[in-house]
Length: 410
Image (cartoon, rainbow, N blue to C red; front, top):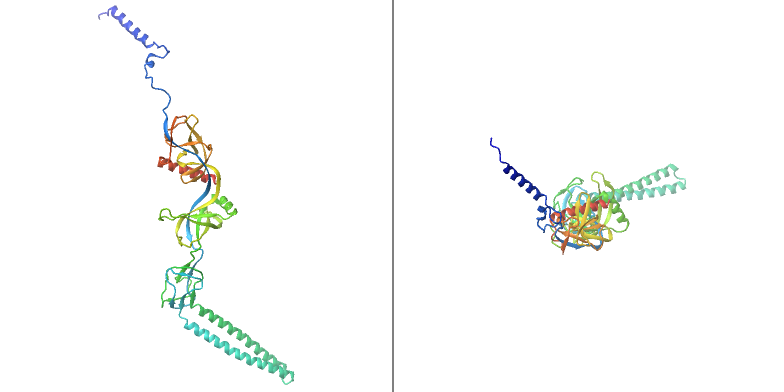
């Protein structure tokens, strides 16, 4: 094998040494030459982020409780016949408003009138017999005073007279019973209210049977009640509110109502005396004026109860609340226009707003663009009307506020 010339090996060694010397050279600042050639614009400071902000506000906030309720008539009566007969007259129409004592049905009463006349005749006969027995007793007493008859004759006359009196009283009771039976042939309204659908017609056979179909139903519509249930966790607040005075209730417009339809005001009339252990709820009943008859028995709707009012609390949009596990926080604008993450405690939810603790009264909270922020991020501020908040952020904030409000009420 041919040997490599020495001058070639020497040239290779010098090239390697020159490369190593270039790699180890530094610039004037002491940084490696490669680092010194990096672009000068790659600064570590973050650029300002565009965010929408709103100021917190102080307000008096009512604490309300919403529940599902069912409209119920304060009085409702199913009318049934108390005698077996046929319908002679139907004096009520479907859906008619009736007054207490108004005649609604008349039945065939010929048999009952005949029984009444018979009882009266029996009473008249026995009264006549009693007068004769009274005369016999008086005559017996006169004869005994003159010693014409023995004492036992007087006693017999007295016994006959007493028996006649008892018979007359029995006849009087029979007449009263016949009058009661005859009165069943006229069916009158026991309450004032609105009649439902009439289920019989003239000539229909009715029977004195509690399981029979009612002739008609009458329900009181004004005033009217709404029954609803509340969680047992709200029992303490509910009882405290009722002890403080009349507790206001608001019936919200039912689904399908015209836009802007007003709610109806009422008051709690009763709180049940036990909690349903199977559902963990408590039944409450409220009473409402219903002159316009906008509430109807059996109707399903939502009610809102005002339990108390929080005075001078801090209110922010729910969309500004950040939820991380069990922690709630908001971004506020710091003194140097940087983002500052502040933990807060939620006290109540108010639709799109939420009551919080832990914020200054003059703070500005970030509503839009908070998803791009980190503590210390520079901010470029612009007013926010709340319309730019994402639906997902608003939904998550609303659920967080509701959960916090429920926890605060326990």
